Structures are given as C-alpha cells and as structure tokens.
Image (cartoon, rainbow, N blue to C red; front, side, top):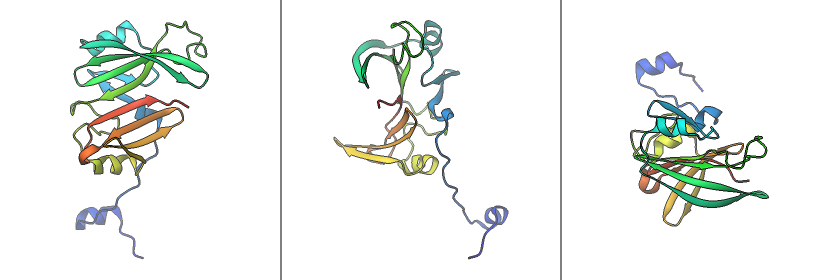
Length: 172
C-alpha cells in the first residue's frame, strides 16, 4: 500500500483522518463568560458572580454515590446549567456544606467543549473529534458518552445534531 504524506495530501486534495485523541482532564473544562469552569472545581460566591446572573436555583435532591448520599443543587443561567454538590466532602477534608461543580450542562450554541463541539453541531462532528463513544438510545433520545476515571461527557445527538452537552462526575 502506498503512503501519502501530509504535504502531498494537502496539495493534491487527499484527506487523511487522524484518530481522535483519548479524553484528558482538559476535556472537563469549559469557558463561560471568560471564566474557566472545571468539573470538581470549588463552587463559591466568587465563581457564581463571575458566571453572571442566575435565572433560578433549586435543590435537585440527595443522590447516592456508593455508600454515601450527596446533595445536588441546580443553578440555571442563560444557555447553561451548573450543578453543585457536596460530593466527597469528607475525603476532601471539608465541611458538609462545601460544594464542588458536579455537572455542567451546555444548551447554547455560543458555548462549546474544550474540543470545540457546541449545541447545534452535527453528530458527525462529535464522532470526528471524540471517537465512536458509547451510545444509548432510549426514551426517544440518542446520547453518545465518553468517560475518564470518574468523569463523563455526554452529547444528546437526538435528530442528528447536538441538543445539549453534559459534563459530569460519574456515579460508580
């Protein structure tokens, strides 16, 4: 088989697709209002202020993670939601009222993942940048999911385009 070198491929219109890179810690960070937001980051008043005006906030409930239950709150902003949780407060050496970012949900095409995927993008773009992933087709929705240790990123690709992006702490 003949190998086409990248320079010749560009000159003569051939395309060579590289395999998507595996997930890294950077994949769990997004930029919102010029503020880097990272899964597991401390949730405090300074970060809340940097994100802009909240539309609303509500208590989601206590969610079981292994042998523990953790409190989750949803903070709704224009185009995205942040879920704060007191996940692993004991292991982090904090008080029960110490919260971290447990989930980031993007709804706006103006917001994107570290690899540049945004709501409104084609399903094929997700696969090109992240790989095939694990799929789930249930309740009339289609999701493509990727994981790294206890962290997940999932794309709702119902209808062939990204409807929402969830970046979340995994529940073993």
